[in-house]
Length: 311
Image (cartoon, rainbow, N blue to C red; front, side, top):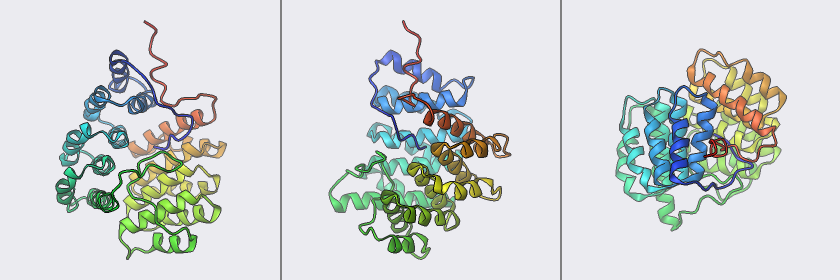
């Protein structure tokens, strides 16, 4: 999920964290409120915030559980490892949830999970297997480069791969679209193209929405949402409208459009609020809330703390 602007770290006491967790774990609350509560907990961090997030993995919404795992990875707290391990191992969880748990384990950067990721890099679900292979490569790269600091990008995210060393758009495009290259190499090209943020690099990324696996295409949509450039709207729209496309890709396209947040994005997302796929219609609902936020004067998307009743 691409909440990239007007954010800050949040201070809260344990009582506040439990109240915010109550919003997150309340299925009667609107999903957009629960998402804001989740990202508030992510920004707060710490053991109690992780506990509140953990409790929510019983929720029926695959989209919400996917974001739970994403946030735990972005927090980079080893206290979340056992939680994510159990989610990855649970074959009854949806593939998009298990995939995100695998990616989160790689994001935390703890080499103790290498044997687990090696096991699940052979998972029969392609999205899970590919994610765990990527996470393994990330951990190996960290080890060989003697650093855990891959967050120094303008998006303040923990990426599943470091950017490639070259900045030549043509070279990066060739790597990105070359399906004979490893997924890790292609991801590195992807993040380099994202970091360049030029018209040429963005258009190269949009070509990736029609190339490779569902996992690859979903990550392309994610980085286009990070860039937030209107030039990518037609490609994102086409993938969202393609009902034969994997729902994991369509969901990420919806959220990317929510990040771009133009009037056209509003119109596109509104049309898919009743999509046959639950994860797509839920994503459109969340994306419309993101549109509202990105067009508002609100400083903080993760605003659940500010909405708690005054004692």
